[in-house]
Image 1 (cartoon, helix red, strand yellow):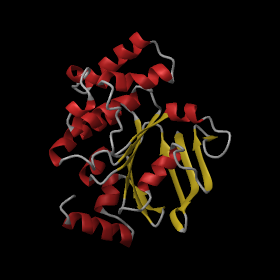
Image 2: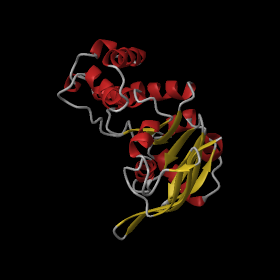
Image 3: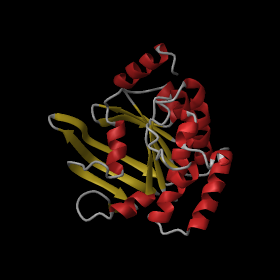
Image 4: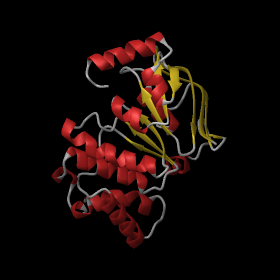
Length: 247
């Protein structure tokens, strides 16, 4: 069942066309990884899905209903479509538990005791219950990113967008964040990930999309795209990744 339908979406910043008529479908419970060189439009696409950026053409549909253009209930959209960025964006003056419960209390109207109980359950699930009363600057980068994922999950989203969530981390912290994503994938969470972690994309994705020139140049199951790519630009990109030791 198609959950997200992206049809001929265009996005410009001044004279620069970042998305040039991009089309992509995401099925329920599917994990889609977006790969490609820097500047190919991965992050922009995620921000357009969540309407953090307005599109200049095309359509984006969720459950068959348009979620672009005027009249969209952005609060409702962002309850269903959570997003986690490269930067953790945690409130530095609030404890970990307060960070993850603020949204459910303020936006969803959840009772404080219920939000705190749910927050502690999720923090325990990622091994950070003992950090609930700490402030973000007392956590490692990997721990802060895991808290950012929990904050998004506390809104009980239908879809989770992950924008290069390991790119700001030291190599030794990457695995602890990717373990959380593996767990979410195993539990059936629908996710769209922009990532440079090719080995992870091969392991966890149902579909990998190679973006080039503002469109999906090639897509398919990981085995097909990584082992037998059809497009020359895909092959060239993967050769560069192999030379860099990232695949």
